[in-house]
Amino acid sequence: MTVSLFLPCAGGVEALLADEAARITGRPSEATRGGVWVDGDAAAAMALNLESRLAQRVLWPLADGPYRDEHDLYELARRVAWDDWITPRQTLRVDVAAQRSPLKSLNFATLRVKDAVCDRLRESTGERPSVDTRHPDLSLQLYVGPEHATLYADTSGEALFKRGWRDERAGGVKGEAPLKETLAAAMLAAAGWQGREEDGALLDPCCGAGTIAIEAAQIACGIAPGIKRRFAFERLLPFRDQLGAWRELQQAARERVHAPAVPVFAGDVSFRMTDFAARNAASAGVGQAITFKTADALQRPAPAERGTLMLNPPYGERIAPKGSGSARGDAHGGAREGFDGGGSSAEFFGALAGHWKRRYAGWTAWVLSPDMKLPSLMRLKESRRVPMWNGPIECRLFRFDMVAGSNKEAE
Image 1 (cartoon, rainbow, N blue to C red):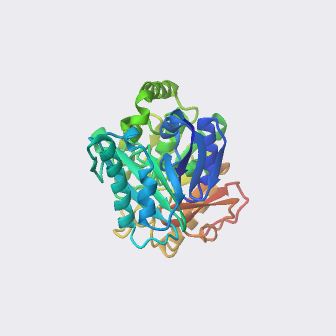
Image 2 (cartoon, helix red, strand yellow):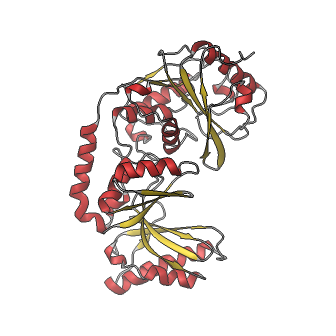
């Protein structure tokens, strides 16, 4: 059975995800605000969960139609043959997202959809399922607009940025607010870096917990992003006769892993963060594919003749030279709220640009920042600026081409 799968993604990533989805499924895809549509069956849904680096989830449509109130949503959900999806012994969860909806209470809408599922199952089986808000077997996503509603089954379960390697039981380190893997992958996709020999080396000199370098190394080694985790579809009835094909997909992905064609370098001024990143890389299966070095980004020489610098810059203690950290900064490579480019940040970025011009001629630098004035801070002219959202924070991914002598030296 072929349906129109919906793949939600971060703002600014839609076109990149459309290309990725078409490559994975071999079918045309359509970008829309906040996501991508692609026609696919159970096999396509499984492949997208396993292979997509940019999607947040893979959603399977169940019902849609006009609505005016919660009663209409109840009737919409009752149309679904829920005993085709779960048994009464399994659990469910309902989440509602609204845009310009006339509904007064999304909580009540959630309750009515849950009631519809339970009532339909009780009529057909004599029993009703339980709700589990943490680890449900079936997670439902209801999207309500001004007049139209669509109900989806979430085939992913946990969001796809959770690759599985941050699990502390496997030796990973989560950190307090790490850069999401899907955003790191979007930065690499926007830069066109695919780990090919012609792409050259990659360096993240402010790596934090290592997300960018790990995504890059997995790409360079051909490692599927979902190979270390489980998915909701593995517990859902429509996919039970597909589990043999799923094991074949997983095995094919494992057999595809290869040695990288280009080196990946990473490091941080913080010994603690470099250690965290190295542990995460080992958990992600790319410990041997990344060369880590604790070093000041303002002093680190280029590790190769040419390549790509890719970073989500920190501030505060991870900017300061080793041993002179400030307690006010973050130390985990997450979103930088309150970033205003003033004070030490302006000094850091000016010095960083000067260092790159002296030592990184021939390299291309990509810098993610919420500060639209970053190029003037760095006294560089960007050749591209790509809109991207880091959670709720609007950012730009700036590209700087480091050609010796072509830019005014930063003071």
